[in-house]
Picture 1 (cartoon, helix red, strand yellow):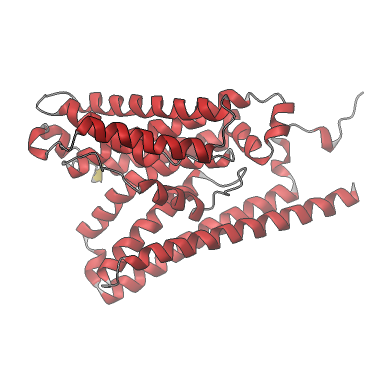
Picture 2 (tube, helix red, strand yellow; picture 1 turned 90 degrees about the horizontal axis):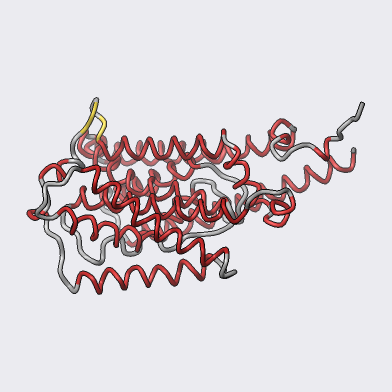
Length: 346
């Protein structure tokens, strides 16, 4: 009978080891910290201005979070693979303008707009993935370049014009405010996207492979993981969800021009990092990224309610990013120390 040692266990076997359990506990602590910070912020703001907890205020915060959370889901998957997608704001912009143009003065079903946005974003994401994987160019450089390319295409297409709300079908505009069982469609879509992303990353082989790629790309290759396919899939997912967010953006705000989504990529990256996804890849969760999106949205609303200059929002977000990166490094150091101690006893 052949005895297999612990060192030759499959990639997903270490999930039950003390080191992995401690790592999981640390991640849960990070997400719990976001929830506590969110609760304290809401409580403090509500004490100063009780209207902050009014039904309309909560609804507005959830609707604004929905768009950011959809984009953060795709971004989290890319960052977990030790990459980044800076083009998502421009993908949202080109998708929003394209779908608004398609839907203007036409009585098309909402599903047509949603599918069109997904398709446009997927194509943009595929281009990013191909350039990163086969062009051997760092994702930071590629997506920074495509950020300007996609935005330039949108400006050239728009030619200074915009699509106004009165040109769009009523069913398209009411989609953002319609609800089912009291839950707005935008929020419901965001919940489905985040839940699906979380299940994929936690319960399916492709999710474990993406984590393995982020932990050690070279080791993932040696383990037989289809790195190229998974990397392309991650970028296509990020682009498709940014395209979907563009449709939701157009439905929510009605008036769309070439500047839609400008600078939004920074908020998306911030939400992911603040939500506990390690910038060095290999750890984090989609739910954490969604919580980060909610926290950033509430911070912006709270500053307005507290009559604090909105420029402080950028400083606060920057501080949160630095704290999140410091926490990531602390986790990495503790895990490395634990692994060295374990190896010393083996």
